[in-house]
Each structure stands twice: as structure tokens, then as C-alpha cells.
Image (tube, rainbow, N blue to C red):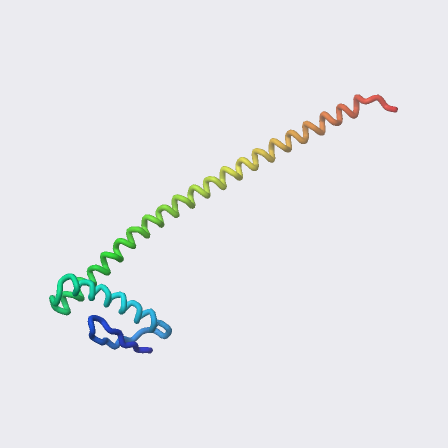
Length: 123
């Protein structure tokens, strides 16, 4: 199992990860370090543990907001799918009705053509 060393708030942490996830883990650590650095700039030296907890809460707040947005989008997608499905059903019904009407019209035209052909004088 690969290990990487990440730096958060100037301190190095050695972490294990799945094969191929090294760069992903380093990127996550860099993002988390930016949260910690932001809080440190805003509040000064308030203790490593407190900074870490506050940064974790900020990340969880962002996650909760993204989950809420995702649920809204999933709901919108479901509505759009239902609208699409309803439109497809209506289009199929319209196609069937049009096909039926064209069939009736074609039959009627054939009947009229037959009558016209029957009523013509023969040469």
C-alpha cells in the first residue's frame, strides 16, 4: 500500500492510500491546508486542534450544501425525465392516431378511385 507525506499547517503527516490515489490524497490535503491557513489568518494562533476542528466543520458545511444542491438537481432530473416520458407517450399516441387516420383516408381514396374507374366509359 503506497504512502504519501502531506503537509497541513506546516506539519508533515505520513498517510497510506490505495494504489493510484497518491495524487488525489495530496490534492485533498492541499485543499484542507488552505482551509486551515484561511482560519489561521482570520483568527490567529488559536491552537492546532481548534483550527483543525473548525476547518473540518467548514468542509462538512460545504459538503452539506453540495449534497442539498445535488438533491435538488436529482429532483429536477427526475421531473425532466417524467416530462420527457410523458411527451414520448403522447407522441406515440399522436403517431398512432395519425397512422390510423392516414389508413382510413387511403382506404377511402382507394374506394373513390375504384368508383371512378367503374363509372368511366370504356373505349
